[in-house]
Length: 246
Image (cartoon, rainbow, N blue to C red; front, top):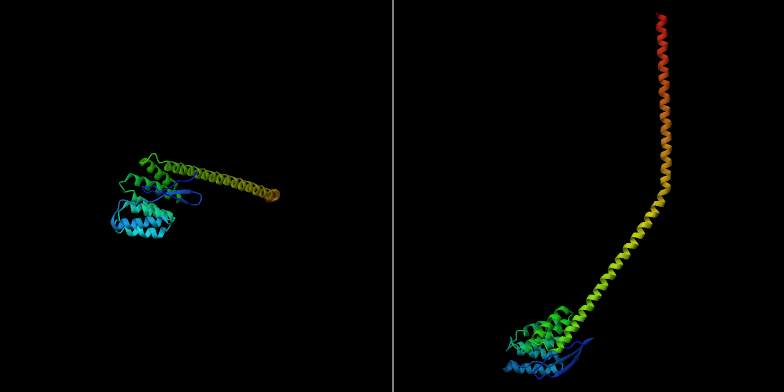
């Protein structure tokens, strides 16, 4: 599906134009609603536009605005030139001013071309809204319907790609977590293996210490028994001595 686009004039002369990936068909430009010098400059801009001399056409339309600064037609024409020059944000501003026109057809075209501008600028949501506004004015506009379908399709594709990226990111995070857990488990096992000999040595040391403490306690008890024995003997000797003295 290709994106349809047009820049219309009441005689509806078609001008083919193409951009990368998206084929566009533009119709010519509004040239009504203004008079005098502004009209002449506008017509000069139209002719330059048809020849592809967009910078010169922009200059002519800008000079026409000196006499008709509020002209929606001039804002619309300037938007067309800026679009051709790839200045999408500036073109959108010009089309927004053209929407103040009381002419339904001009408003419909401004919404439509503004949708193309937003589409090319990557604002799919804004493009969809603009196409819908254009269809509210002219529900039979087949180009607006096709471009609306294209914008909706492109939006679904982007949403699908975003979901895939999120799933891949989530799966990658889960894999990293598994690898980290596996690494930690391996390190823990290595740590346990390295600590096992040390644990045996510690147990042996504790056993030796316990045995030594038992020996010391036994020696202390033996010393106490000897001391008590000697004390008893001394007391008995003193008792015998006293008896003799008596």
